[in-house]
Length: 289
Image (cartoon, rainbow, N blue to C red; front, side, top):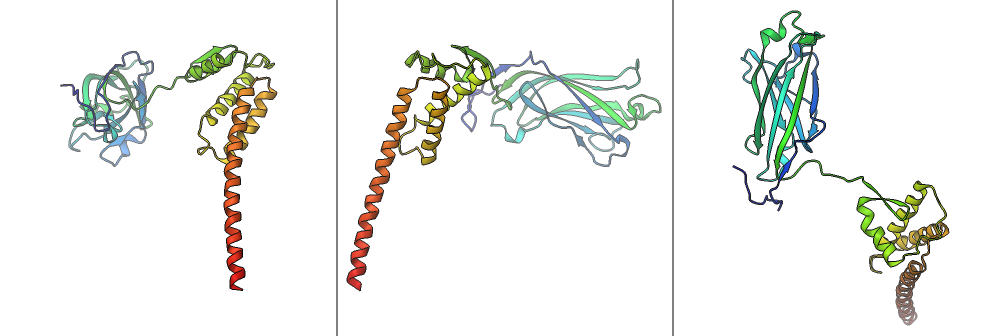
């Protein structure tokens, strides 16, 4: 039943095990339950297994003539997922009896959600007679408490929440993000003594200096045409900042100087063109006079 074709957005179908997700529970309290006029109500969006979900309740059943409360689990953003997506989830709903020691109503199931079937649940979650009975414990202060527990077993296609790594790595006494390791290692490989005179011991300051240096090298990786005048001005300020901190950056200073010389030549060329145009306009004006 699983699709193996690529989606319309070119995403290859993959399968990801999600059984170890730490946070799987979502609590939903429906207030003023007895006076609800709408056919259905929906919870806020919540995330489990890096997928977005939402609960839906039909207080008088799906057809408004039912004698039971209906509860469903929705894939909240199903209209925006690429073609061929599928999500396999095991989930349970508990209508909580809020009187200590009394029995709550629990139902559980599992289902493969897809673009044709993005909703699944229980049309007869609990009988309204039991729900509304006096002193039943299900409605306290006219509030109904529902606990959903969702375990995402497999995902075919894209996830809603992408992994953002915040791992910190120590490189020569500098605390850097995992995403920066390659760039920092490259700096130390090309210039082994680049930070030998850095005096700061505070790890936050050292991280700040390194981030400024990485930003500076990123700016100077651009071609002269891509560099704006503000880029060059800010680069000079940043360069002075990290040099004062003790970094040895003769090579970077030379690269910035070269970039500025190219920009000066470009500006001088434009000025010469403007001077020639001015001379031509002056000559035309004199002849007209």
